[in-house]
Length: 147
Image (cartoon, rainbow, N blue to C red; front, side, top):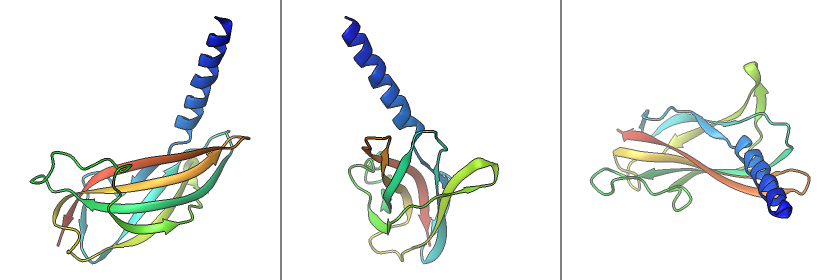
């Protein structure tokens, strides 16, 4: 019984540590309108944590998902869509203890992407802890695409 309680406690601490490391998209805001053939700034925010984290890389994708086709966009762990960026993620500390990196990316011309609802998604791969443990996390926001 005590063994099971110890395992549950360790599991809860591990889950809390992983959740404490989760990033999010700081900009653009959900619901923003992105225009084809224009540059956008995608801000990926990583929380400050006492747990060590080694960044491995990030991918940023944009997926059209008009309401006429699906009720919801597919989850980013199933489809990232058109990849706008893959490579290193090296966030730095900014005022008010915010840790983030800005990526200036171009929304490509209409073609693969269509006007209407879309999903901006990131996939972040990092290592946490002394082990370390590999973590692949996904974040997304819904945006609108327009000419």
